[in-house]
Image 1: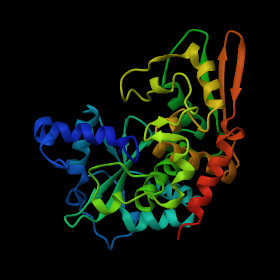
Image 2 (image 1 turned 90 degrees about the vertical axis):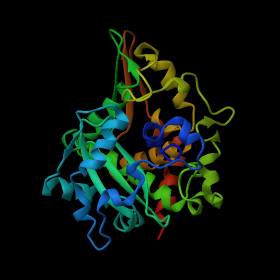
Image 3 (image 1 turned 120 degrees about the vertical axis):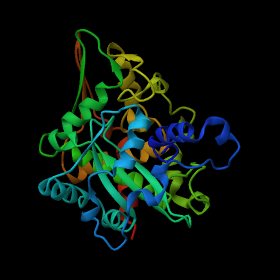
Image 4 (image 1 turned 120 degrees about the horizontal axis):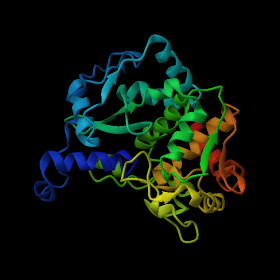
Length: 332
């Protein structure tokens, strides 16, 4: 949820829809939408995490349809083999991540036709104790890592004749690996406070002063979604993905200049340059893809003059990505 991840924009819009902007303005915090309330989930703390991977409750699915203006959203039930693959990919992450999923995840659901790869949102009970739920796009079971990442990259550009962009992250693993690495990092961030939490709706104990190590990720940022002086690059503020935040604003013919700016920045991806929470999630995800899975990470822009290749992990982002993963590896 922004602040912590990009799902906050969706969450806040839904809150305004449900309680009305005027009413919300009078409350601090406003009445939370249903998806933030534990009772929506029929959560049984004695159930196994595996049993919480399944169809999205209809009441929650309605909230998602309203939030994104997508009445066509449908719940998807993963097969036993798909559940097993999810657990296999989750275990590529440091052990503390699976612990957080088992202790704090009230439900992991799949939404057919979902706008984007996934969304991780916090949930609270009546006493203020915080959990999370996760929604993923089942297309990630069918696509390779390269296909999933290419689809996201293309979504931020206006097509231009003679131009294309693609991401090579290999074909050995499914796009689900990226989705669980990225969204799993957001879940860790909620409970470990690795990046400063600025979500005013989350219970106060989770909005404590940043821990000593957050500077590793905030040094590149002046505030949540504004890079520090000298770390921004032209066009970053025009980025949007999957149609969220409006249609794409950058012509694909402008991609070479955009990636040239990314290459000189501390960010590992265009998506990671949106905020410090997304920065952390992307650094961790690509560190796992490249270092743990042994896959490439190359962005190729093809135009009339030929190909331009960008490999962000070989630039300034590489050491930051390794540091992000090391930080999670130290968690217990």
